[in-house]
Amino acid sequence: MPDAERITHHLQELAASAVAGRRVVLVCGVLAGATGRIETLRRNGASDVLVLALGTGTGDLPAGDDVRCVVCPGAPIRSIADEIRVWQQFVAAPPQEALDALAAFDPDRTALALCLLPVTLETYQGRDTLGGRPPAYTALEDKTLSLDLWSAAGVPHVEEAVVPVERDTLRAAAARLDQGHGTVWSADASDGMNGGADRVFWVRDDATAATAYERLASYARCARLMPFLEGVPCSIHGIVLPDGVAVLRPVELIVLRRPDSARFVYAGISTGWDPTPTDREAMRDVARRAGAVLAERHGYRGAFGIDGVLTADGFRPHELNPRFSGGISTIGKGLPDLPLDRLHDLVLRGVDPGIPASDLEQTVVQAADAARYGSVYTVSTHVRPGRTTSVLVRRTPDGLRLTRDVDAADGELQLGPHLTGALVRYTPRAVAPGPRLAPLAPEVFALADRLWGTALGPLAAAPAVR
Image (cartoon, rainbow, N blue to C red; front, side, top):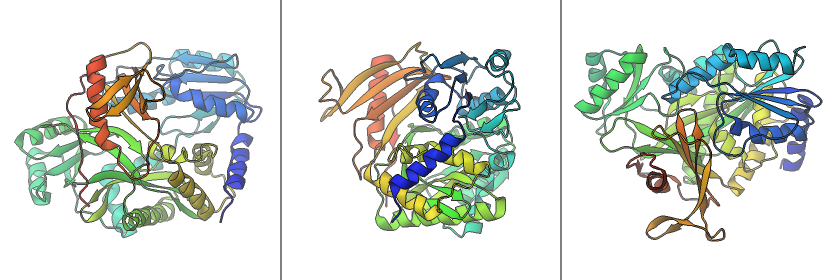
């Protein structure tokens, strides 16, 4: 049995060796996203920190005499795809205020650049760089490529079709693939990476087909079509190391539906949910097989995730996320002192961590099974708060209610700044093993609508059908 304390200490030392005694430039989306990372950098012996961000964000902001923060507002953002494009522009061609801050903070270019954004980046402004990823890894995000991976890995999957974005061609493919619940149309990456269900459409009638076609035609050359899969949205993750794949535990993806809409709403992650032991191992087998193909065919190293649905017939994958995603971050909270994010960055840059994949797997899975975490969140474009507001809530037979009693509260609901408007986030005080968090999400957002006018509207969670 691997020694969790020994492995944690070893990886902490490995992560600290990259930053000890160095100035660090943190490149991130919002300042609030850097706060926890700065505390870790301090523990690891880093000296001064420069934070370059596009906004302030929701939550506690960085503070201290050793930190300088520069906010560089970017172009208007209306969607996740817009946000990803702005992130990429922010690192590839930094605005003048970022360049000026860099020159003043690190004139000899000896600082370490640490990028917290899922962008294509190999070196940041001529500095030693961790974070980001090479173009070949980014290219694997394209949803039209997933079928090749499932086939090569020999994992169960549904039929898919990749077709040009032409009205009649799309409708013909949809008619062939529909198994009774409609079809899902996803954009290719011809206009850049997308995620968070941003360019994904559930087509089940003429109205939703028209919506999907009009949107896809504006930014995609091809689309991936597959049958709509009823069941629990979920994901499975792994980390490709030099000696093999460390496979982690299943994660619930909170993906909600709007009545009479073609759009899905991505709304959070939880490790509370437990599929049956048989389904759990089947999901883990998918990740192990896919990770081996990524390593053998693409020379891949580091973390990845596979999103899918636990259907009546079992887990069926629908997309690959070749990066350190929110699911792995949530899993890692089971062992918060283990620097999985830095492990990913170092392995991606060719560093051998000196830990067998099997030992890392057992350590992380046991910790994640013992301590469950999750949160519900989404973005409202109808309000733009200038600061973070928090309220305590409790669950009652009549739904979520506000409370001032700290001991009676079941969680905290926040509204705060986001690059596209406002972030609405609910963090439960405890996540119990077994149940899904998704059925609570519509109540959370309905309460936010009443309190703050977020206009998220009626939403519904996917049913469990397995």
